[in-house]
Image (tube, rainbow, N blue to C red; front, side, top):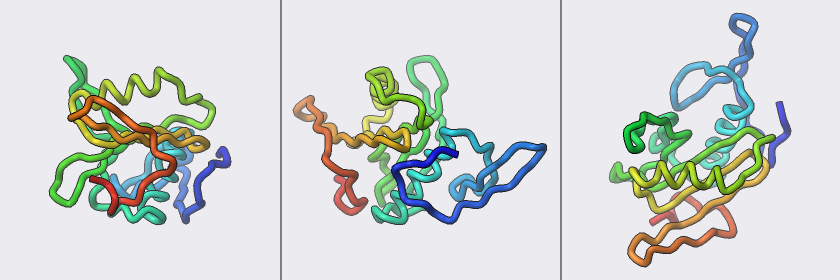
Length: 150
């Protein structure tokens, strides 16, 4: 798999039906190891291991209705009161983070209305804070610690 701009973690791999799978602690099962899944697992472990995000407050591939279509979020983080506060979109390392990627996560957020959006391809990471009251947003210089999210 591609070398990422994220810390390593002790992942578990196995082969099933001649396909490599990676263990997902959130879904509690082995998942097909795609480039996007490689990024998602590394990024979520970065958040839990280095940014104090509680594992129990992260949901992976949650169902979501956008207009009339059923979609799935890559990851959604909740605060301690159970309210969604952060939406994460992961792409494979070879996928450039373009306006189309931001448009996708913004469409998802029209339903969720979370205050933070993160986009990563494992090499480049973006985090922005939304201010719905003033209808504005701000890119953050670094990924915040869980305890600083409002």
